[in-house]
Image (cartoon, rainbow, N blue to C red; front, side):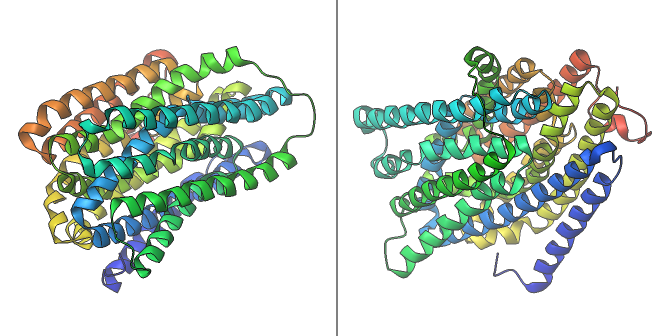
Length: 470
């Protein structure tokens, strides 16, 4: 992004500043007793700023990697890193969302022994699960690697080493969001990790090492392990200050009951986000995968608003639900929908306007993905129109229904990709993804209305903004 002219860059900065100011102003409303809403306000702005910083840093790093590596090697790296994200997400067994939901609930009800047990045993469990997943992946490559194209093998072996630390980071991200420790929870995975990858690749470039997928995978190993260690140290300091010493309880049946539906949600979400890249790489070429990935991730910058708002309000929704404060809960949900949709719409317009020059930063060949962005934006805005609906349903005890929706979206996405990609190429992948996202958003509105009596879609709040949700 450094090559974009200063006027355009300043325009983007100004737009993002206005979006952040708008979010902060909206969050300033409805301050309740005890300053709870004030903390939500700070958390939302902090999460928004971190995700904005992350989006810029990730985008810059992807541009640098694509420029140095070329579309073919970059496509190989995209393919193996996508598998790391999928396996790492599945290995956390839904524990990241369990942390977000259960930690505020346990603290609200004074069950510190359960909170201590969740923090201790939850991380041990996912480290064991993720290590087993990585070992199974290595064994699978050893026995069945001959079925893959040879250029994928070594990068895949290296990338699998990242799986345990990616999983641990995800779960500790959940701990941070569950307790409102946004800096400790979000900064390491969203800012430190991509920054370290960029620094490692820059060092390799200056040393004259080959700018290949194997080098990028090695940089990812350094970055993921260092990030996990830093995050662990930071969080342990906060935990010591937050939780007094005492007994530790371990209720595995409760965690299992909660985490299995959330595992389905996590797995479905990962497949929804990454299936298109994997299927494009399977049916087409690494170059096609790299071009599609660049276009899709450029348009997906819209989603940082969705995740920032969801990260900020999730622990608040869980606490209000445990407290039984229905009025405040409905008001928080209503505002979360607005905070998600309107900034997302503004961001989508800006990104589409700048899409072609942004893709040019990756290299001239990457502009072939520009039409893809106009299809994908329909899906992202469709999802934004229902606010952070997955966070809302999960925090209010509807994780099973949410899991059913997410899994249905993922299966629809897979089927449409398999049908459309061989026929329409990367445009087929975009159509599949957008269709799945809009379908899931509509299903979430149905679940929220029938199960919770909530109307979460933005069109329910256009005429009477002050009217309570429900």
